[in-house]
Image (cartoon, rainbow, N blue to C red):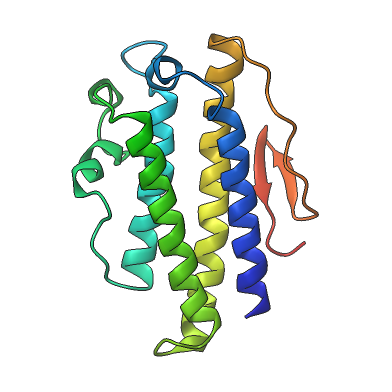
Length: 177
């Protein structure tokens, strides 16, 4: 139970870092792509949330998508050249917020034992949250590259946690630290 709560804090830390990378950008910067075979910062933002919800709903609870119209667009199987028509920044932010609320609600239910098979789902939830945090940071690296290299903005400081390190340039959560 305590481990799930600690991992939820790491999830929130990762999402806060993501927000630091994009919330000061203009809508045009969020939706701009360096070239046709690349993804805009906005696509990464939607994709991070899409994967989080997909994993929560498929591994812990069968829930409908909070925005089914984004599912196909934000799926990584969608070739990059088809990722250009993004929703508004406001819609992306709302989608991210709703998914984060669902992650917290479902993991909270697991941590409190309010689910069938709470011990089994605690194991699943621990690995799921670790994967979600690392996926968030994976895309944060790509967002960082566009932010700094293409748009010329400074990067925020890395988040601080005893469980975080850099591996091959990427922030990585080590669940065993």
